[in-house]
Image 1: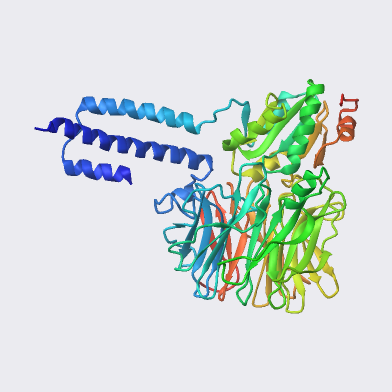
Image 2: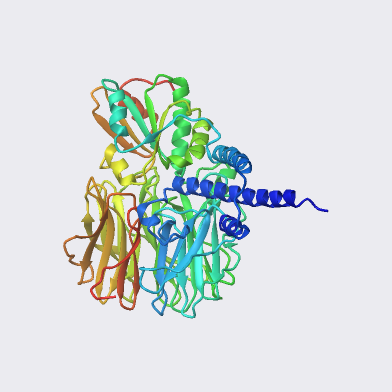
Amino acid sequence: MPDLTNLTCRSTNQRFLNFAIAVLLTVAGSVLSFSAGAQTEGCQSAAGYPVSVHCGGAPSATFDDRGRLWVTFVQDQQVFVSYSDDTGKTFSRPVAVNPVPEDAEYNGENRPKILVSQDSVIYVSWTLKTSPRFTGEIRFSRSTDGGKSFSEPRTVNDDGLFTGHRFESLFQTESGLLYLVWIDKRDLEASAQKGEDYTGAAVYYAVSRDQGRSFSQNYRVANHSCECCRIAVAPGEADNVAIFWRHVFGADTRDHAIAMLTPGGQVLDMNRASYDDWQINACPHHGPTMIPADESGNYHLGWFTNGNAHQGIYYGRYSFTAGRTMNVRRIDGNPGAGHPFLQTFNGTLYLVWKGFDGQQSLIRLMTSSDDGKTWSEAETLATTSQGSDYPLIVSNSNGLFLSWLTDEHGYIVRRISPGSE
Amino acid sequence: MTFLNYRMARFKNGRLIPLRARTRHILLLLLLASVAFLAVSPSRADNFREFTADSFAQIKAQYQGQEFLLGLWSVDCPPCLAELMFMGELIQLNPDLPYVLISTDPIEERQSAVEFLEDFGLSGMESWMFADSFVERLRFSIDPGWYGELPRSYYFDDRHNRQSHSGIVTRELLESWFQRELTFE
C-alpha cells in the first residue's frame, strides 16, 4: 500500500518548490527591473501587469489608418507591441515580438520602431546588441494577423560580420516599399583588416518590395558617418526616400549630410546640409529630424549642434534643387536643449524638443504657419522632475500627439495640434 | 503564474502546511534567495561610487586646493574606448596624475563598465557611475554647457578654474592643462 502521508508531503514540497521558484523569479525580476530603472510611480500605477508601455524602455508609436495607436517598447530583453484605441489612455496587453529574449538596444537615440501598412501588416525593427563592443544586428519582424503574433525575427544586414550595425530607421513609402537605413561598420572592419584608418562608420540600407517578407541586398549610402546618432528619413519622389544624418566631414567635423535613395540602391544628390563646424572626435548622441516641405524636393530640417559656427537647436529648409539649406535659424540655444522632432499638420509646422531649466525637464514646442520663415514663441507642453525619454510626435488624420515616456507619469500621449480627441 | 497555481492548489487542498515543513521551506527559500541575489549581483569587485546630483560637489570638496582631471565616458561610445586606452597608458607612466572617472552608464551596468576599465588598467582609479535616471540633472550638476557628448573631459586647477574638452584628449591638451611635461612612451 502506498504511503499517502509521504505522497502528500512530497506534493506539498513540490508545490512549495514551485512557489519558492516563483518568488525567486519575482524577486530577481524586480531586482532586474529596478536595475533598469523601470520601477517608478508612473509605471506602478499601470494596471498591475508588469510588462507595460509605462514600464518598458524607449517606446516608438504610430497610428494605423483606423486611428489605432500602436506602440513598441523594450522590456526585459523583449520587444513588445501594444495598442490603444483611446489615444493612449488604455493599452492592450503587450505581445512579445521576439519569443527568445535578446539584448534589444533601447535608448533615446536607438529605440525599436513600428509601422503599420495600409492593409494592416505591422512592421517592427530594432538593433540587437551582440557581444563584441559596439556591435549589433539590424532585426526585423512583422505581424500579418493584426499583432496577435509576429514572425521569427530576422537579421537584415547581410555581411555576416560581428561588427556594428545599429541605429536603424524604418520607413514605408506611400506605395508600400519598406526601407531600413542604419549605421554600419563593415567598411571600418575591412579597413582595420588592412591596417588602415577609417573615420567614423558608414550608412547602409535595404529595401523590401514584398511587405517585409524579404529584403534586398544591403546598399551603401556613404562612408564616414558619425557612429551614434539616429538617422532621419522622409518620403522622396516616387519610391525614393530622403535621409538626413550626422556625418564626419574632414578629420572630425561632425555636421550633417543629406541624400536621396532609390529602391534599387542608387544614392542621388548627396550633399552637405549643415555648416556648424562642430569639430569633435566624440559621440554627440544627438540625431536630426526631417519632414518634407512640399512635393518638389524641399525639406524641413531640425538638428542639434555645438559647433564653432552654431550652438543649440537649429531649423533649416533644404532644397534638393538648389543643393543647399536656407532659412537657417536657431530655435533654442539654452543649456540643456536638445533632441528636436518635427512634424506638420494642416499647413502648420510643429517642432518639439527637450529642455532643462536646472530643476525640471521641459518639453518645448514652437510652431510656424509660414513654412518655417517665422516661428511662434516657445511654449512648454509638459514637465517632469524625474528621468524621461526624448519627445516624439505621432500623427493621425485628426492631429498631432506628443509621445513621451517619463519615470514620473509613465507613457504620455498628449494632443499638441488644436482640436479634441 | 506558478505562484498563483500554488495558492489555488493550496486552498483547494484545504489545509495548512505543517510548521516544521514550513520552517524548512522558509530556510530553503532564504538559501535560494541568497543564491539568486549573488547571481544578479556583480561578480567582479569594483570601486564604483554612485554619482547623484550632489556627487560632483563631493568630488570638488575632496580635491579642494588641488588640481584634478575629470574624465566622462560610457560603454556605448567608441571614441571613449580610444581615450581610455590612451589614459590607461598615461596613468601607468604617471601614476600620480589626479584622475577621476565618471561613467554616464547606469550603475546597474557596472559589470560591463569595470571590464572596460580593467582592460586599460584603470579599474583602480577613483570611479563613479550615474545612479539616477534623471540624467539631465546629473549632467547639469557637472556643467550646464555639456550636452551629453562623450568622451568629455575637464581640468580643474588648484583653484578649481575649469577647462573643458569634448572628444578624445591628446598629449598636447593634457600638457597645456597641467602646465608641465607628462611622461609618454
